[in-house]
Amino acid sequence: MNTWYPSTMFLRRNLAVVMHIRVVCVRILCPVLLGAVSLSSLAAAAPSLVHGLWIWKSPTVLGARRGAEAVWDFCKSEDINEVYVAISEHSEASEESQLAHLITVLHGSNIRVEALLSSVDADEPGEPRERLLRHAREIVQFNQQHPTDRFDGIHLDVEPQQRPENKGAGNLRFLPGLTDAFRAVRGVAEAAGMTVNADIQKKVLKGDLSERRMLLSAVPRVTLMMYELSSPEDAEGVEQKAEEVEKDSQKFLTLAYDGLGDRELARMAIALRTADYGELLPQMLKKLDEANRANPHYLGWARHAYNDELKAAH
Image 1: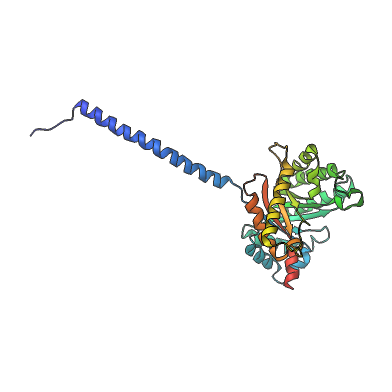
Image 2: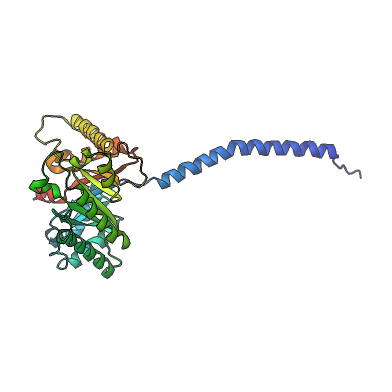
C-alpha cells in the first residue's frame, strides 16, 4: 500500500496559511476584547452617586413605633443610599440602642449612616472647637462598642456664618478657623476608619483661589446647601424650575473648582430642601444627577429633610 507523506514545501505553505489566519484573528479580536475589558473596568471604577438624607431630632424619630424601619422604607422608596443622623452630646447615651438598631437596619440594604454633629462656634479655637472634637471622639467610642453596628462617617454642620459678626455676602473672616475645625475632625475620624463630609454655604464658594483651596482640601467631601433659590409658591412650571436647578448647580460647581487643579480636593454633593420645592423635590434631585453626572467633582445630591416628610404625613 502506498502511503502519502506531505512534502516539506506543502507543510511550509499550510503552516504559513494557518499563522496568517491566527494573526488576523488576534488583530480583530484583541481590540474588541481589550475594549470590553476597558469599559467594564471603567464601569467598576466609576463611583456611585451619593443620595443623602438629613434626619433631625433623632430621639423622636427613632423612638416612634418602627422608627428605624420607617426610615428604611423611605430610603428605599426615594433612592436614598446614605443618611445623616443628628447626634447631640446629651442624647447619644440615651438613644444608643436605637442608633445601633437603625444602623443595623440600614446597613442591611447597604445604606451608609453618618453621625451628624452641629456647632455654631467650632471655628473658634479653645473650648468651642474642643467641644466638637470631644463629640467626634464619642462617635469613635460608639463604634468601638458596636463593631458590627458602626457609623460610616461623621457629617459636620458647623455654621459660624449664623453669628452676627460673620454676616454679609463677602464676609469670610471665619473661613480659616472653619477649615481648621474640619481638619481636626478629619484627623479623629479617619484614624478610626470613618469618612468626613461637611455642609457648606453658597457664600464660601465666592472666596478667592487660596480660600477655596483651603476649604476644598480640608475634608474629602462637602455638601453645598443650594437653598432659597426657589419657592413652592413661584408661578414657574416644573420644566422651568428644573432648568434653573441645572443652571445653578453647574454654576456653583464651576465657581468652586475654577482655577484649582489639585488632585486631593473634596467632591461636592448638592443639597436641596422641601421648603423650596415642595412635592417637586424628587424631580429636582433627579435633575441634579442628569445635569452633573459627568462632572468628576460632582458627588451626588442630598435631601433636607426626613422630618419634613413626617410632618406632611401627619
